[in-house]
Length: 405
Image (tube, rainbow, N blue to C red; front, top):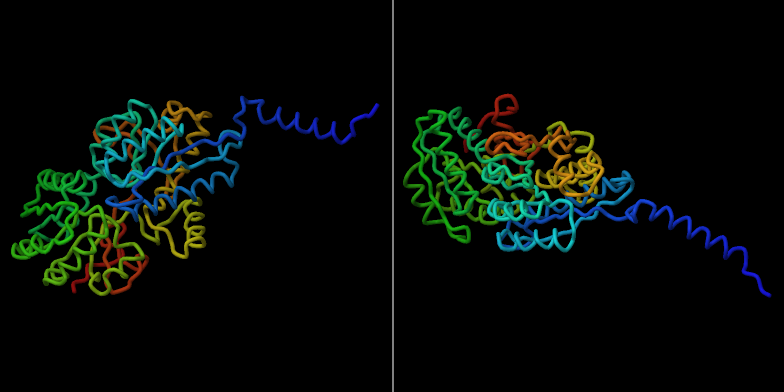
């Protein structure tokens, strides 16, 4: 009678021990926790924003997994959906992430119209969704339990540039705005903010279809009105580049200053697209390379530079930060269930890339809302890096004064 080799029993015992370890907690010891990243990765959405957010989110998951994962060693797994910047695709993508992929949360929202459209569905299905760069106040003023944001909201943005306008002494302000929730919302907030602050300004809005690429007729009308400042409210940078070129070619800019409503001039392709025509532009920013970062933020900045050969910009920072916030909230909840995660997000304090983030049940649009700093920067010479661009506003962050062409 043949006997089985000793190593057979040793292997069998090893397998049994491994199985016990793996399944002793219900089979979930190595089961990943899934986080959805739904962001615009194809037109007509702001694809560059989506790509930067996805980069940041991917590196956030790398950071968490390299530091032991969550919930006793479970890795984070990202599940990506492209919403193309359209509400229809956003609704379908969110439903797939929740119903088919079983994600615990979704980040990556850029377009306010998409985030607003998905809001009611997220409340119904109960899985939290994060605005990464969608700014409409309607997103959080509905007080949805599932809606969270770590980005500036339109009332704060409008208030900030109205204070800047007052400091600069501008009187005639033109708003060139796309016909979206973002564009029309900021027009409304600027008008409301002007009345609230008691400012004596002449304000004129020029609204255009988001799909239009030739803005020469509007720019010529705007030039004839002779504004002191043009505030450009585009959500897609490629269209904004064309606008700046056309404004330059008709002699409107840089004689009339242009203030970009968000930080698209801070990207590496800005000077490639505009060359000398981009000089003297003013732009809103939420990040400056000389800002002090947390230890996590510094890690991300250096690792991103090593990986991509350039330093990260705000959308990438925010994508990274939201993944870390969710990882910490999972640990606080000791659960990957969306309802438990929402409760943890409301009561916790989370270290992100530039400070401590909380999600309080604030009044109006400040519900589940945390904002980055808001600044006005200006390029004062061609091919200038954002690091060397002076901060003109607010006064406590000011590093330089406005330079006229």
